[in-house]
Length: 87
Image 1 (cartoon, one colour):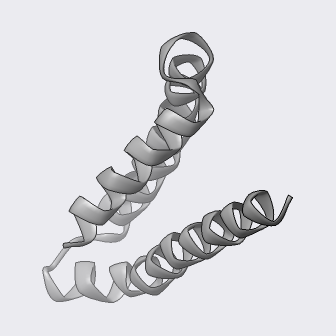
Image 2 (cartoon, helix red, strand yellow):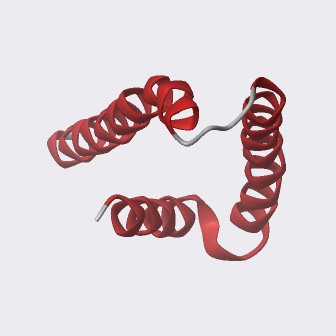
């Protein structure tokens, strides 16, 4: 039981760090887009595309988790992908 509790805390910390990284970057995007001369419509489109990609990706990853990789395998793959993206 102690090992399961430790694994749960590791998972919570990793997810928290991932969400922290995203929450630090996303609010800065509108200012960065303005610096690059991107208009309001393009900013709205980029935000909508991000949300749509989250929905489609979540559904695809959920199906992949249920069918082949399993929950643990997909979670590890997602963390590796996020770490690679942030590096």
